[in-house]
Image (cartoon, rainbow, N blue to C red; front, side, top):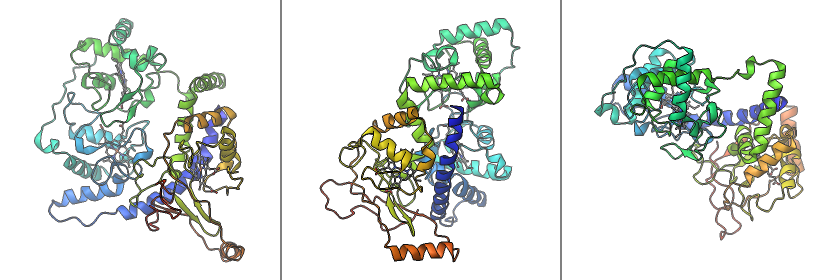
Length: 452
Ligand code: HEC
Ligand code: HEC
Ligand code: HEC
């Protein structure tokens, strides 16, 4: 299992490099028209920072629908609702500027939200906060209602014991599992207010807490809740002292992180993770498919590089890899006629690990980095197949790859090898598959060669 985490690295880097390059191209397409001149200079400066640094995740209009959004979990925030998770204000209130400053400067651990203080100046952060606030009228119409935190009591063994009782009484284990381990949680299928699935964090891994892991941070989350998510605010169901006790108790649950374990403990830790994975192959498969970024190539995208609605995993992306040929990504949904529905498990595994297609064609070792997937264990491959089988069917008939004739191919190779020319791969937006079962043979709904 330990070696497996290294195995992720190579394919992820290869794919990330492809996607990184395509996002750069998209960002140029995104670059905004000049400001209409109505706003003040600072708003225009904030807008510029937002559009160059935030829009590819949060969307140009702040709706949380940027280019990268469909690939991220949790999804980037939709600012238009004026609903924020990490605040020092009462449940339901808008955040203060200082709350936004903290989130944007420090980032949100275990999510894609970066710590912007590392990348842009504090003045730029202030300007961009002003701009983020323009996406929701709540900031113009309401005032933040700060939650007043009293002074922090001292942690004692008896306070920890009370904390454990409070944890039980308030049913924290129904979402976070026994002792915060995630095991035995009865509330499954949780969703946030935007309809995305929510997984409560393991309280044994405090480094994943987004709002901070000190007792004061945790206490504040209890009192103010995490708006927009199932994590409630415990303002009326417990006293102030009880919530401090529960916060102390939560800090006592933290396990030793992997980077501080010795070799023996690390081995035991990975063995227990392996048995977790075996007990839930679909969850394991989803994790592997997400971390190997299969969706980034196997989903059709729009000209602005956002994922086409309903086309997750339906393939149909055209990739021009001159002089090797033009390739179309396979439909990985469970559709029987055009997806993986009529592939056997062995055929899927063979494609992923050896690059041999169902039609006995040979895939190049790029863009799909199957040589790196070759090292996946059989258990993990079974998990990937199990998860792919759960993808709802989408009809999308994918054309076969097109190869150049031998003379053109040799000319291309000559230019590359002898003349040192570089031909970057081109990803095209639009669907190059046929998504309408009654359409003829022509490629129907591809947009004309807009390049990712
Ligand atoms: C790589 C993607 C990415 C980029 C770029 C990004 N964010 Fe985020 N951001 C996220 C994600 C994901 C979340 C949601 C995390 C969560 O729900 O816990 C988020 C959440 C937020 C929140 C909400 C915090 C809350 O309390 O609800 C704010 C504010 C925010 N981002 C501001 C910004 C600003 C300003 C920028 C640009 C300077 C930016 N983000 C750039 C991914 C990104
Ligand atoms: C209905 C389910 C539910 C219950 C009950 C619940 N939580 Fe949570 N909790 C969540 C979810 C979901 C999140 C993740 C929210 C997010 O950031 O998107 C969370 C997040 C947290 C966090 C991390 C905060 C951070 O900064 O990231 C802590 C700590 C926590 N819960 C502790 C508790 C404790 C202690 C209780 C009982 C007093 C409790 N939770 C009750 C669902 C629940
Ligand atoms: C960087 C882009 C990229 C990534 C990432 C990627 N693929 Fe592919 N995949 C392709 C392309 C392109 C083809 C078609 C190749 C061809 O026709 O020669 C393909 C073909 C396939 C096929 C079809 C084989 C057949 O019999 O026709 C399967 C199955 C597949 N990929 C599964 C996956 C899975 C599972 C993942 C994640 C573990 C993944 N792919 C990641 C680009 C990618």
